[in-house]
Image 1 (tube, rainbow, N blue to C red):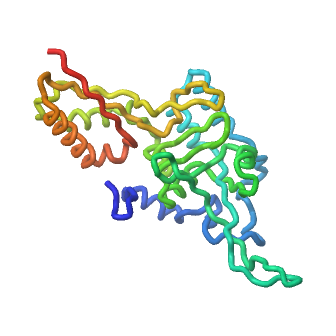
Image 2 (image 1 turned 90 degrees about the vertical axis):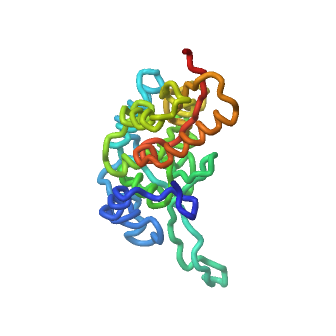
Image 3 (image 1 turned 180 degrees about the vertical axis):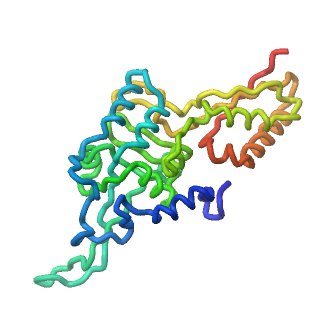
Length: 289
């Protein structure tokens, strides 16, 4: 369900996690918005002796997926323990007259960067290393945070996606249910492998005689590809869950539409599905009697 502004409202436990963590802020509790470029506010992170390289566990999980030995849940699990870099950029401040009569900014605040995904949703870019962030945007300042903190900031900014290392050889999209799990520091399982999701989808068809059976599969948008074209088993923006409805033979177009509309309505009202499923594609098949 979406609110009047078109944004999906945060579940109560996500909002509570955000409030208890001090809202949208970096690892030191410094808010993103209004951050100054001067003095102590100019510090890029609160991690001691951070050399800016990518987390070894995250790199290993991504490498395993590239090699065909890992999946997207392994990558998200590794990300849960990783330090990442969030880019912030200078925002035009109030102007005034400087030395020699030249116009100059009186202040230069920093703002958190967000992106628009192809489907129109807001995405928060994060980077596994300072180098990958610099290659993406040379003027962005890297702020080091744990991925859970970045996920909380994504929720606060209304971003339903986190995009890890955009523009790199391997770009990973973390979809909304995984972002929310990271924000709560909870384990995550993709909807197509979630037994409770399967039970909820099956229960939603209870009493609908036109549906003979239902199957759940990995959606067509789960995978992505490297910059070189190698196909991966995760990292895509969706659709995440493929639901196959096996219908009785002989239904006319109106009957099929009624079934699909009814199921979509039931799924939208189910709180568990609304929280754990990012996107659905429906396939219709004729049931074999």
